[in-house]
Length: 348
Image (cartoon, rainbow, N blue to C red):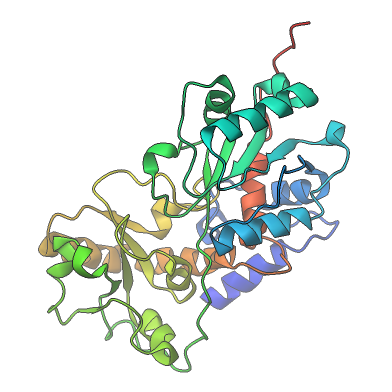
């Protein structure tokens, strides 16, 4: 079966028809759960979010944050009836001081009954830099219990709590499809966008290697997609350099290689996508070890990983008018998965 056929089949599955779709074989989908498509349809029909009134106009510092917030406000998930809400959005201004933040959470606690039902566990907020815990009770509950939506990659990893928090995928302009992509069997083993003077020793060791194409920025945007499509692997230095093009790599069949010396817990959609089968994770130990891992992957499981990545790439597309399973709606699906919270009985 061609990858185009797999992608076409997946597109048919996400149509919101009344009929129950036939699930694709697990090997052909990038999802961790075989019930993702069915659960997504339930989410579209039933998920409701109440947005508290912000105390001032929100001006987010990143385009991804602004687009997510605008999409949320105009989405069918919005409800004006807080009693039917599954989750509550806390509109935090990026320039809140700790005192202002504590005062705002305190006002929600005082003016509404919903915070104390779960101590904030059915609430979520948007913050790329994250919230630093201080001794104030309101901020402690916000950070410990509420879902934080950050931006990938998180710059302050200590402010990110895996399995509770989640990240927005990067917002970047998708390149046009290549007219005639090179044959991967004869093109580059790897493509790297390095971090300049801050590049790791591993990436610096690849600069003169003829099997790798390395540049700090795309040298020619008109052929950028061809370079991705012609490369077997796309290398990302986690926390050191530009990660905004990871969706581009997936789209053009360039298997992501994440270079990190510690576990990576903030990849977008980690509780939805099978990242371990779509990407290679390596430590920055040396060029020869890296090339050995990539060649073994190329021989044994490359086509499977590439196929999953191409299908998964649709989740990294931001649309001004969201459509099924794009970036906004997949973030919403992650929030839907977190809607079940312990409701503490209020003490009268």
